[in-house]
Amino acid sequence: MAAGSLARLRQPVLDLTDFVVRPWHPSDVPAVLVAYAEPSIQRWHARSLTEDDARAWIESWPGRWSQDSGGGWAIANASSGLLGQISLRRLDLPDGIGEVSYWVLPAARGHRVATRALGALSGWLFDAAGLHPAAPGTC
Image 1 (cartoon, rainbow, N blue to C red):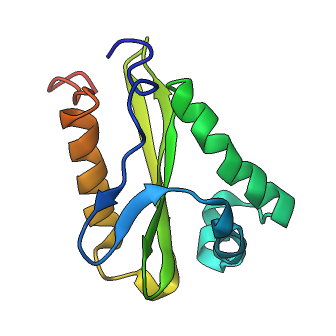
Image 2: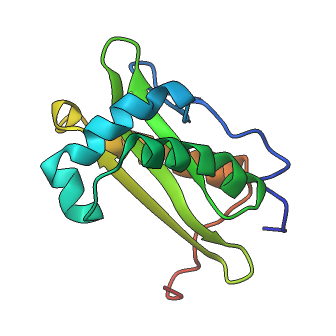
Image 3: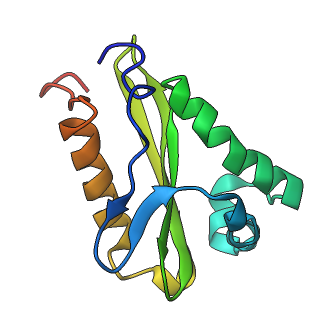
């Protein structure tokens, strides 16, 4: 994938019928605060966020997208609001490395939210953005 590949594309909104995977909005700050206070999410992130931290975290994603270094999405629906998040946490085009991370809020767990979001995002990254999986035996 050539440098500038993500920057040339609009960060997608992926519609999975009962929820969407969409770029973060400034209005998501309160939900992010609740999520990072949740014990099982906090266990893996080993930190909580202040309102300023949550705002800065949300505001960082467009810059990472434009620099081809990552992308962050809220997993949300109209009735419940935020269900979780999925991120192209790290993207290193010269080394051909990408990492995905996600978390799901307790009320959304057990409903294949992360699995479906990962499938949709992976499909978009491979088909529309031009990323490709590692060749067998190279990982």
